[in-house]
Each structure stands twice: as structure tokens, then as C-alpha cells.
Length: 493
Image (cartoon, rainbow, N blue to C red; front, side):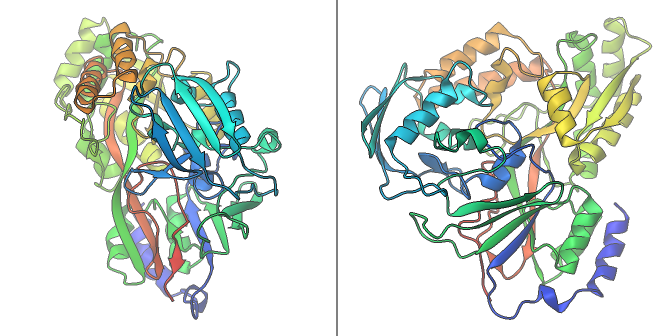
């Protein structure tokens, strides 16, 4: 990464007139770190899917705005019954999917029933667990009845996993996504980019951009070079390293350091020895120096966390002192666990810089207390298969970017292999609680349980280091949801 600052000065000499367009332009090349495994947000857990298609290609009944607020989308308005059990959605009319088929209430029923079905492959199936029935009242009206009140229901319907799809195109959305959004899918050049273009028959306000290309650039140095040469116009989350201060001083670029929902964790396989021993997990927690990890993995811009919860949430509590950095305490705990001489394990690291660079630091810190880690770099598809799906790992580093997702710790078959009936009970109560203050208290209780159980090594909240051409406007400063919403993006000259 030390080469990035040197590259910054050198690359400026090669800046071509191509990056200084004459007059307003209507194309955009956006740099992203990871290539998605497919393009169907209703059938995969990878954030990289939503980062391309959410709000651009696919839409839900509601949508999440740039400040985390719930906004109307395919439902222009709705009513909620006094008991909080019935939601009547009034749908926009004249909406078509990109293949020309009409959108109506039957598509909503199909999508919600499909997502909550017993054989559903939706990665966030729990979002739909409160739904008892979905009834088509007429082509423009849908009534959803819940089994119990759910305070987060409208927010849940704004997730990428809840977008509305058509039965005609749902089977092929992984390769050729067909939605109702302002952009339609054009092309996927495997290993290189995904291109979308303006959908001329869009029901809402037309977008300014005619085309947008999402270019996959996992290497940090290559990202900076692409930005400086003008090959890429914007990085929603640039891996800039030590080059960031100089980029910030360059008037050609806008730099926005925002917040994300990304809890970056040292994930631990709780179902595998010796990590099934609480003392071992506590030792790991005491061995971690968050400030050093943040400095090396995110240029010092991350916010330390002590549990799986965003500091931006009003229910957040600071639990970073639950297991403060204390290598001697870590060694003592290992001795109490019968591992006075330490042990060896593997650390599987996906491509993002926060994982690869942070992993080196974590390995060094754990080595100081007697835990020797073999670092195994894996590609994103390998991580999804080996770690997330098959739970074939000891330790890994990943950022969970789904909003307000502490409930994953209650899932029976989740890759942490964590099981605590007390935590599950809190989640069950939260599911049926609508009162904001009671929900806040329950969230705080949940944070304390997983912090004290040292389920994972809670590191930091991933910052959003947005860098783009200074003539661009409309890109999000923060990331309340895993998305690169291009609907308001335009060139100012």
C-alpha cells in the first residue's frame, strides 16, 4: 500500500483529456470491489448483488432512502390496521417490467409467497416470517396479513431481498435480471463488469444517466490507478490506503467519509473445538487491538464496536470494554482452557482490503498470545461456498453490511454455529414488539449477550470512503443499506 501515494503523483502526469469531458455526459463507470455470484437479490446473501441491482434494476413495495428512511416505491401508499396486523398496499399503475410485461398485485403475491415458501432460497427468509397471508384485492391493491405485529415490517419490505419479481422472469434473474427499476440490465462480462442502461418506459422520474458500468476492481492499487487515469469515474468505497490524504487535497475529486451498516468482525466457528470453549473466545477478544486493526485495515476511519450493532443506531451501546485489549489476560484464559501452549488454526480471508490487510494484523496479534494462524486467501465465490454455506473454516474476517442484522445470531444453521436460547428468546420478543422504547431495550440486551459470549471478535464499523469525480452529484454519502443507488446521479457539466 506504500506505493499508492507515489502512484498518485505519477498518475496525474498521465491524466488524459478523456477524463475531462466537454459538456455534461450521460455515462458512468463505477468501481466496485467484488463481483457478485449472480444478480438475483432474492436468492443470494452476497452484498455485491444489491450493490448493483438495488433501486437501479429491481424495486420493492418500499425502498430505503439515503438516510435510512422508508420511502414509497412500487406501493405509492398504504394503510395499517389499528391492531398492526393488516397492511393494505396501493400499487402504482402503468408499471412494466423490463421485458414489457405488466406489473400488478399478482406479482406482489407471487414474490412474497415465493420468498416465504418452505423451499425458499431467499437469504433473508426471516424478513417474511410474520406474514400469514397475501391477498390480491384487485390488480392495484394487495392486503398482507401478519400473524403478529411487526414494527419493522415496512422497513423489511425495503430490503433487496424483498424486491418484486415476475413469475415469467424469476427463474432466469440470476443471469438476466428483469425488474421494474429505472435501469435495465444490458450485459455481464464475467470477471470484468456489469452494464445497465436507462429504461425508457420507467414509471417514475427518468434517470439522467444513459448507461452505467459497474467495474470489478478488487486490487487497491489498481483502484487508485483507475481513478487517477479517468478510467473509473467513481468509487462508492475506495480502497485508497495511504493515498487518501492526497486524493482529498486534489480538487478533481470529491471525497466523502460516510457510515455504513457494515459490522466488520473476526468471525469464529463456535461449533468447532477449541472455539466452542468460551474461555478461548474470550482470549481471542482480549488479544485484539481494535485501534491497530482500524489503522491498518481502514486507514484509521473505522469506528470500534464491541457487539454486532451499528453505532449510528439509537439503540447502540458501547461495549468495546467488555473484553479490552489485554494480551496477558488472553494468555491466562488460554491456560484456564487447557491451552497454555497455544494452538494453531486457519484464517480464511476474502478479497476486500479490510479483510486481507486486517487479517495480517489480527494474525500478528493472536500470535503474541500463542495462537498461530495460517492465512488462506480465498476468492469471494470460495468464501461464500466454503465459509458461509459449508461452515468449513476456523476464523475469517468479513463485514456484514445488511442493516440492523443482529438477528442472524438466532439462526439455527448460520455459519457462526452459535446457539444461545436466551438470545433467541430476546429475538422472539423483539419480533412481536412494536413499542420503540421496548424495542430499544431488547436490542441493548441482545448486544450485551453476544458481546459477553464473545461469539465473534467485534472489530469496527466499516467506513464508506466515497471518492468520485467532483463534477458528479447524487451519489450517497452513507450506506444505510447495501446499495449504489444511481437514480439521482448526474454530471453537473
